[in-house]
Image (cartoon, rainbow, N blue to C red):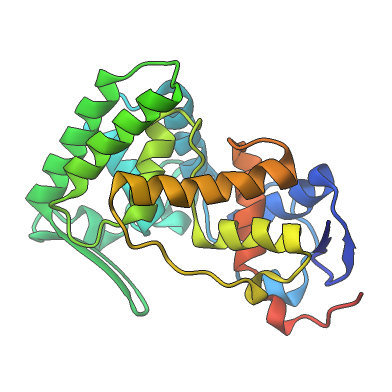
Length: 257
């Protein structure tokens, strides 16, 4: 297998080298150490280390309150102000996410809009917290399916809450056993397997909120993870590297083969 370096050179895939080349690009200022980046990557880094550390603690220790669910969803949907989180050394939300005077929780990013009645959203966070208390380690296949079924039922009343967000909650509720799913991470791992640029990988956003449909999505992703990284439940550094690689604007790069 082959992939493209930040400089645009196609090279043999090495798991550790790939992760080390791309994982820090996930963060604002490219992490604490920083690495030289090709111009195609200079706008990728948008995440604060402080917010990420808090989310990683939730992943490790489990969901301990409804506010943890709120933090998870803000992180995935785009409700975190990463610049403010970096400067304040904690998670800070964008104003439209936490404004209690607003009847809705809102995220607007270009053409993307997520809007949910605030009370319905709070009730949903409460319900996911209850689900988290219902299940403990370990998480065999049947238990994962049961957790997923509970999430799907709870998410039924939330407009615009599709399979990607459901899989995010499944990731946290299973403490990382079921991998988090993202369009760009999926395109990245598939691109590595097929020795292509992520922009050349076809992707159709999953729409089915059925348990069967969602399990099919994650099964396909796990197939590629197993063949590229040797495991299905990848760690956070691997996911960060894939996220960056899949987001990178490789179409601007002068590819060397």
